[in-house]
Amino acid sequence: MVDILFLSLCHSKPCRIISSQNIFVTNSTTNFFGVPRNLVKRSPGRVQFALLFRKKVNMQLSLEDCFKILPKGGVASAKGFETGGVVAGLKSSGQLDLALILSTVEASVAGVFTKSIIKAAPVLLCQRFLQDTRGRATCILINSGQANAATGEEGLRDAFAISDLVSAHLPDTRPNQVFVASTGVIGKRVDLSRIEKAVPSLIAKLGHSEEHNMEAARAIMTTDLVPKYISVQWESNGRVVTLGGMAKGSGMIHPNMGTMLSFLTTDIAINTSLLQEMLQKAVSKSFNAITVDGDTSTNDTVLIMANGLSRVSVVENSPEMETFEKALTWCCEYLAKAIARDGEGATCLVQVEVSGTVTDEHAQTIARKISSSTLWKAAVYGRDPNWGRILAAAGTAGVEFDARQVSLWLGEYRLMKDGLPLTFDKATVRNYMQAAAEAKYLSGEDQVNVYLKVGDGIGYGKAWGCDLSYDYVRINAEYTT
Image 1 (spheres, one colour):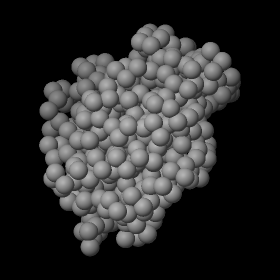
Image 2: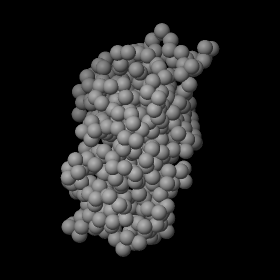
Image 3: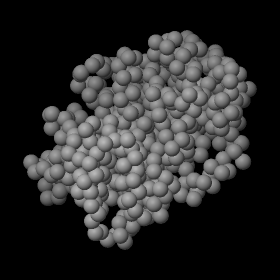
């Protein structure tokens, strides 16, 4: 089993969408970026600039590792799931604002939530329902327009009332099997009367087509510019397993899990405790590794439902568990990167990778600190390769390292070696940064890549952010007006 990093010059595409018959793992290794890696060829005559991390003992590429991306898939692609979105009148814009994700059978559910002291009413409801049902659910209702945060006991009653009214329209569904999520302006209660009127038509139009997946993803958007959804599929012992998801988020993005929302569904069979453990691991490598503005929302929620209809079971330390973990992490990373790329006013994604620390956690801490640096984010927007801002952020991350061992790359351009600056062509690097801003959304080319090596340790971590533009200030200055 391998983890593959594709550099920006090969479009950052994941290995799972590359035909395995065209992949050749070479015997040659390189110590690029402080980690021993193998070069990978995409064809016999051409070396692709992809590098295999030596983080697994068994370094083999096999069909069992692969999954395919469903080009029209989303949160309702897994067997037994339906979704949809309607206009309930919760947004003054008149756009889609109410979505439902429904499993036709009872499902295992796991969740990870904001660690903010101020938790929105739907977060409190979900946490209570997870405990009361021991992780069982049938559906999730999500509204946009009002966050129902800082709304006191009345807001909490509103959240429970939503569960009651939805369950009343779904036979054999108890209120505590209806999870609720909200996003929008903090301090605004949800408009129960509008939701009550909209729920019957929402349930009636549920489905699993591309249009249904798109409508649901649009219904949970606030300042987002694009809907965010994904689905992947793989085979296990002749049976097909599907995992799908959607997310929203553009501002107030600096999750500390454990107003950004993500929902995942799968037809795999898995017990709740293992599902919770795997979700937490995936979140730590994805949603907890992104930042747009350094502000943590009161409503941060990630929920996953697994209904078992694929008849493929996941147990600890099984091949099925390893494949599912890889798919879950990849989907979470994709959605997390989509959120960071769609940051309010952003023109490009910024990916930061750090190696050479004692532990992965130390590397992750440094990577996220760099991603959060306002000065560095502003420099990216100005296409200014001001590497001093990267180094300054890394030095205040609270992680010990030897400054004399620091090496730094911006894309393929090395700017520092052994703690000392190197001469580089500033115009060329500026062009590299500009090209990222002009590239197609989530193409892999629309990101500025930062690689920082701080020592010879085995630790590795990465984080994502975006640049900071004038539009970010404008959007947030006018948000409630």
